[in-house]
Image 1 (spheres, rainbow, N blue to C red):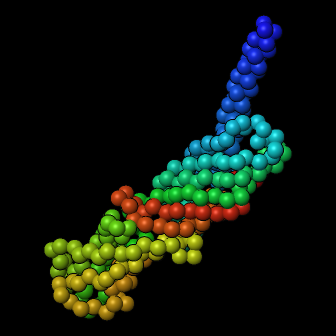
Image 2 (tube, rainbow, N blue to C red; image 1 turned 90 degrees about the vertical axis):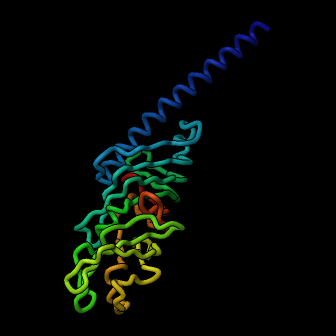
Image 3 (cartoon, rainbow, N blue to C red; image 1 turned 45 degrees about the vertical axis):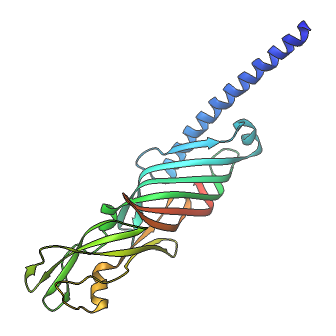
Length: 246
């Protein structure tokens, strides 16, 4: 009986040591993965990397990790022709089935899903902020974007008619969508009226409608869905064979 107790104590101690070793190893691996991702994606700050699943050491022995969560703050993505940048405030992705090389120099996830947030101020840079002629004697430009409720964006426009700026800006609710996996498109559901002046739809839409291309997301993930939210547009991202490093 005494021998059994000793054996049980020994097993518990070994189990505890294994858990400690496993957690130390996963903490070290998270730091290494974060540093490699920062280098690979040329990030300004070190991302958050969390390796899920237990035990970690047996996953490593098998050459594949079940689940890795990555968080990147203030990611600068390429916009348009690549000369401009657009800031993504909070990019988070859940990587599944991550396989890595023997020396850990490369890692690729079978699939990835996540979310990203772009503030209205950042998206506003895409809209025409300089007065543009939309009809004889009428100029207009977008001065603000905000949450319009029910997944819509409220686009606020100021206009000048015959040299006089309208006392109040006008606004229109717009639908926001993802096009071709790399572009956020904002399109007005209706057309605003400027002091009762009827304007050609195609001219008004040069002001109210716009789009922003977003290239170079980490690992090649793509935009999937988008909707308006209180603090900006919330985007769902997804991808397959997503490269984490190497």
